[in-house]
Image (cartoon, rainbow, N blue to C red):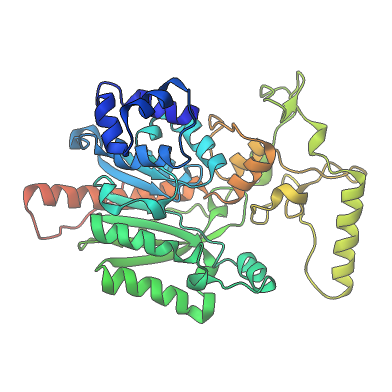
Length: 418
């Protein structure tokens, strides 16, 4: 309700009450009652306002930003941060999860001007023109964990998954309609091998043959930048010829270790919310595993070791690089348990430590519960990876913009930002 009232208030001076009513398909008295909070608006109204009214603002002047981009399946904005670092301006965002929306809007308050929930309900022609399309389209239908879960439930996966797998085609229809100069798509490494490679072949066919883009695909491990083993496939596409090459990436050979993101607990950082407490900012005891949970995890690991399986918890210390943080971390924390000494029960990472594990700055706001925060960071991207990809993509995009503005068709050699 408050979200709708805020959106309606943002339109004052741009539309009369009668014009708003006409555009929304209701009468003026209904709009007035919504504005005053006298009646509850329908659940779709916020998205309708964002999709039909807010994107119709005057287009961004080129001088205000090096380039423009849209952020689809945006999560909490990790890809956006990487591209903003090199002069980009986001002109449209889509994210369906209300808790992720809360985190995104807390960190990008200007996203209210063009923020859609369900991208499947957005007309591609209502999306503002943009130079770059960014999309971390849902990975559950293609991930190892996602496929295993769907198989166990007797459900289809990949493109056969009617609720998530086909969301790739929403990306494709937007690319077809808006013809951005470039795009960056992110997904799990398993996308390449899913369904014996057929899924990835379909994706490449759509992007290359049907839409006419030149593709550059690479699996990058986040541990170059953060102490986490996290492999993701990145698909970069350019509409026109460029000299883009993955060889220009600068990936540190020796990444950081876990101690670089852990709370020091020595008073050198201020306590934060319920993550850390007291003058020395000690970690709140709530993050230490209960005796019952710790016993269960040890017994579970022992059972699978005896059966010759590799399942079990992942215990780490300051010298470690962790396993991949997943969206299920809130359940028991088993993939990353931080040692607190030989005679002490291990603990989960705090949400702030999870944010750091994804390369997010400490200024990143966490306005949701721990459970939702763990889900969000487990579904997020390693932001410094996105920033490094932006570093080598942006000069090519900017050059294509220059060529378009000057009517140049021959592509000169380019250099990435140093």
